[in-house]
Length: 166
Image (cartoon, rainbow, N blue to C red):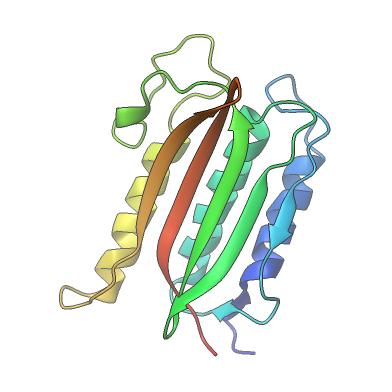
């Protein structure tokens, strides 16, 4: 494996384990994160940026999930040399969900986070895409949705067009 090549499953597992040992009142308790990822998927293109992106989203899973819940992280191939990663969790209601990537601060004073993480995530994705070049197709993107299901709120973040090797 090349110097900058990283196995996606190992990145996810690394941050799952790191954030699981941080005890803090701002973190959900007794999470059982379920990871579904081909252990052979690797990335070398800007893999340090990809690692930061995963770290931010996994940190948010620990901050915003309901206690005793099971968040899911699912990585799947979509096209030739591309993958997408789905992060799903039962969460608190995001009041200002339309601008969570734009502000860099949290308006909800009762929220567990500061609001800077998802803004920084957006900047990292923009930088990743700049490294791809102006003529690149299938730029990386992130999508967010919030669903109300049986008196629960499900947060879904999808990172699309992650460059992978085969």
